[in-house]
Structures are given as structure tokens and as C-alpha cells.
Amino acid sequence: MSSTVSGPTFSGPIFSRKAFRLLAIAGLFVVALAVAATVGLLRQPRQYRVDPPVSAALEGLRLMPNGIAGSPPEVYFALGQPYEETAYDLNQGKRLYSWFGCASCHGDGEGGAGPSFLDGWWLYGPSMVSIAASIRDGRPHGMPAFRHKMTIDEIWQLAGYVKAIGAYSAKLTAPSRSDDRQTRPAENRAPAAILFDQGSAPVRRPKQGPSP
Amino acid sequence: MKTAAISLPLLLLLSGCGGVQSALDAHGQTAILLKSLIIFVVATCFVVWIIVMLVLIWSLMRRRDGQAADDRSLHRRITIAVSGAVAATALIISGLTIASFYTTRGLDPARDPDMTIRVRAQQWWWQFIYEDADPAQSFHTANEIHIPVGKAVRVRLESSDVIHSFWVPSLAGKQDLIPGRENVLTLRAERPGVYRGQCAEFCGLQHSHMALFVIAEDEESYRQWASAQRKEGLQPREPEIVAGKALFMARQCAACHTIRGTEASGTTGPDLTHIGSRHTIAAGLLENTRGSLAAWIADPQTLKPGNNMPIVPLSADELRQISAYMDSLK
Image (cartoon, rainbow over all chains, first blue to last red):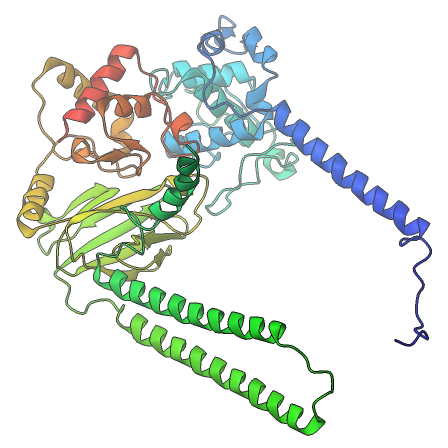
């Protein structure tokens, strides 16, 4: 072997100081991502069925005497208002919306035989309790009660989704995309001006619900 | 103890080669062809591997004589060795290609099948429709089919949501089910038996719980089974089952499931007219017993998360009545 091999000598550090620093930053970034993902997972463990005491407590909708608005049960806040905020619950709500044939009266939110969820007008107010109560107990002029068809947490999930259809403000969480053709803006959009421009919608069906 | 510890993993390895679902335990016409192809390819590759290893060992062990061979003869020998290896490779690969071509040509769907079954794959279960020239004679079932031994069964494959793949390894090769398109496969069982199949194309959360069973039996038992399946659901007499039926119709069960002979005529979920006669429920997830039926109805989302059946709020008595009704639908 001749000793005249030329090329880099390997006496110094393999990486320059700058490269090492870059590598350290990248490594730190990856670790931070992993930690964030783990924390995210821990924060919201998936529960397919709520515990019986929780579901019993979720039944306690305290409505005002006229059936409009009221306050949700304390357990709803203790749970961290999941039905409006978590993507899983919103998505379950979306599945329930199609499973229970809501679209046959309410369309894809645009309404039909039943009121629209997009026009910014809620016959019984936009609060979760009202919507959950409408689903659970039904309302006059055609809204059936789903008390015996759905469990109470399903009703809350569906209420969360219905509220998200006509949301007044953008959300960070969203249900999954629709497979069908889009007929309206996505649920997590910022309020689409065009939907609300017509003003607080005319009450087209004066027989439905109390007049404003 | 030690032998047990060693032999157990070996036994587990071997258990993959037999049983209700194995391409190496072939009992169908096309599966037998495919098995011979697999064995031919593996044997050829094994022989090639042995030869390569022998040559490698020989060249490693060979003693080098000190003086370098003269350039010219070395070059010639290398040329012969390399061109020989290249020629052998080309020969083997074309042999395998020809074998594969002729074997798979035999997998073409039969021209004049004895019967036809339509399959609609859904997330995550199999809908089977036995077609008949007379529409009154055709019937639906789910996740379990019976076929007569020795008959060519044309399987028309469709999907109603995403791409699935129909694979009963002991009877035939894989075939995809593609939305908006129909594929065809021929099943022909040469021996009676229960053959398990499963979805072989990732199709979502419960892809692994999308199994099916093919029960191949002699002509007579098949005919009995088919005529039993054509009948309408049994009219219950016991009070508990009568109550279960009333509940089934009153709650939303009937919106998705069909029980022929009753007002339940939903088409989203599996046909339940003869659910009690099937061996498993929920596409092979649970053995079909009254207990597992009740467990499934009580909480389908925990047993098979993501599936399309919602929890129905039922009291303990109602649950017992509905599962008794399901169990009675033989």
C-alpha cells in the first residue's frame, strides 16, 4: 500500500460545530413533537361509552319554563364541554345525523320540512341545552323525540354537530369531511358572510316554534 | 419443559400452514393451481440459493496459489462463469414467468357457472345476494355463504364504499372489490369444509374484523340450506320472543335491517332473516350465541369501534327480549 493517499484526514471531529448544533436542534424538535403527540393522546383518551353515572347526569337539562335556553348539567362542564370541542364527538354527531335520518327534514343543514341550521336563526335559541332538548324531547310541529332511540351522550354528540353546522365562529376542531358533494361550507369554517347576509332569517314557518 | 418451550413456537409457525384459512391448505380448483405455482417458485429459488451458497463456500475455501494465474486464462474463465450465470438467470426467470402465465391463465372466471352469488362489500361486512332467474327465489345473507362442492360458483364482486378485497385462500386467489365496477371470481370447492376468508385490502378502522366463511357441502345439504334461507323469518310464539320482535320493530333496528316476513326492511345493515343460523356475528368478530348477540346489541361501538351501528338505549329486559328474538331467527 502506498502511503500517498490524499483526502480528508480524520483526526478532527466528524461533524463541524455548526452541523452538530443543527442536528441537536432537529433532534430536540422531533422529541418535542413526540412529547406533544403523547400529551395530546393522554389529554383525550377515547371513550366509546360514557360511564352510567355520567350519562345519568347528562340527562339533567335545566330548561327555562318556555323551553328555550337554560343551563346544561354541571357534569357537562366537568367533562370539559366535549361535545362542542372534540373532533371525535363532532364526528360521531355527523354519523348520527345521517344514521337517524335528520337530513330527511333538515337537509344538509339548509332545511326543508324542518328549519334550517344555516340561516343564523334558532327557533329555540342556539344553546347546546336547547338543541339537546329539542332532539331528546321533540318540539311541536313535527320534530320527533329521540329519547328512546338514542342514548343521552349520542344526543349530546348530535347536538354538538348540529350547532357546528351553523356555527357563528370558526372552530379548531371539525368532523371528518363529507363524502358527498358539498352543499354548504365546512363545519369548521369562519362564519360565511353570505349565509348571514340575508339578515336574521325571516321566520318562514310562523307555525314553527315561538315567534321572536 | 425445555422441549415444550422450543417446540411451541415451532408449532405456532406450522399452524400457519393448515386450518381454515391457508393458501397452502388448498381445497379449491384455483387455489390448487396457485399452490402448485407457489411450490414451484419456492423450490426453484431454493435450488438456486443452494447452488449459489455452494459456489460461495467453494470460492471462500479455495486456496490461492501464490503466483497469479496468467491474465489471459483468468479472463477467459471469468467470462465463462459470468455469462453462464447470466444465461442461467435469464433461463430461470423466463421459466418462472411462463409457469406463472400458464397458471394464472387457468384462473380465468368460468364461462358457464352453475350458480351466481353477488357480493357487496361494505365497511365492515359482506353482503351476499344469491341470484336466481326467478326474483322470488333470490335471497340475501351476510358474512357466511354455503356453496355446493364441485360446482363452479361465479362470484360477482362489488363494493358500496371503499376498495375491499375478497380472499378465501383455501379456495381461490384474491380479487378486489372496487366501487362502481364489477369484478368476477370463480369459487369451486373440491372438498366439503368450512373455509375462512377475509378482506385483503386495507379498508378502514375495522379492516381486520371483516371476515367471511365459505361452507362447502354436498349438493343435498346445500339445497336444504338454500330453501331454508328463502323462507321468511319465523313467527315467534314464546312471549319473550314476541316482545323482542315488537321491540325490534318499534326501535330503530328495523330502519337498517331486514327481516323478511316482517315490516323490517332496512338495507343499510345485514339481512337478519336467518341470523340465528349463522356461525358468527359482526363479520367473524364473535361466535353466534345468545350472549354475544346481547353483548353486540348492548354496545357495538366498544366491541368493534367505528362500525356503523349505534348504541340503542335498552333496559336489561328489553335487551334480553331482543337477543332472544335474534337467536330464534334460525
